[in-house]
Length: 293
Image (cartoon, rainbow, N blue to C red; front, side, top):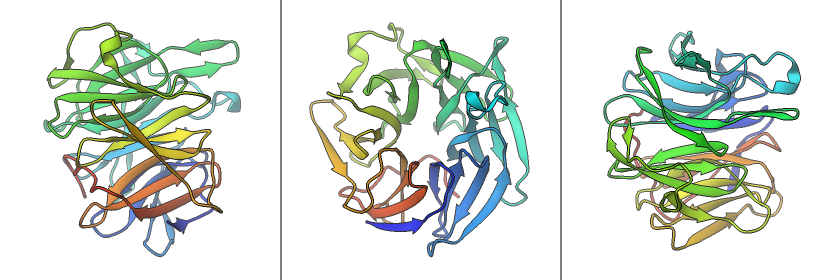
């Protein structure tokens, strides 16, 4: 495992590009940033707020969940979904609300084969008050958005199984990984959000789940807070393996990961506490996403 870049302002949302560079969001800096293989950084776009999860769409643009920034900053007034042109850096806001309700803390997203996407809204902790989370499905052209799961307990990372038939999402506060059967694009099997059948795995002790990526064998790899590791969960939930950071790279805020390289065997991991992007060889190839750039 090696450090690719340092000095990042709470990195998240890694996206490996075909030219060997990696995009990350810097939540506390409000930017989408490109990192070269040698560690050089270049700001692609100034997004403001708190850009979080990112993914490449069918048009080659980057789509971002923006959580609006930290509530304690005094500048937070809700979150939004935005599109960033990789060439010009132009930022376009696609969604700020759904059915008249403000988006609170959009966190992470994943595209399906139609070119539209699912995303999580973690909610927001605001002193003694709290916004409850939801899952949404949205069209990439900004024309339609629908809430598909509510309530959801602090939903964070989100991903699709290799056959696109299962939607996974991780709960931060409970350290639980949940699944929902996809019946059609944007339509999930109708069960209660807390139905026991939706539970894939729950971690013991004091841990928390952040964002995730699915590997080529269908394991769900979840960035795990507090313990500072990646938890790889089998698709059936019968087992999991935790991959700890090596001595000298410890970080309790392991926020996200993605797979890259020609063989998809390189894992890029963002460390929020120490502001680093690191990389390592992964035991299995990552799952090729629907769209890339």
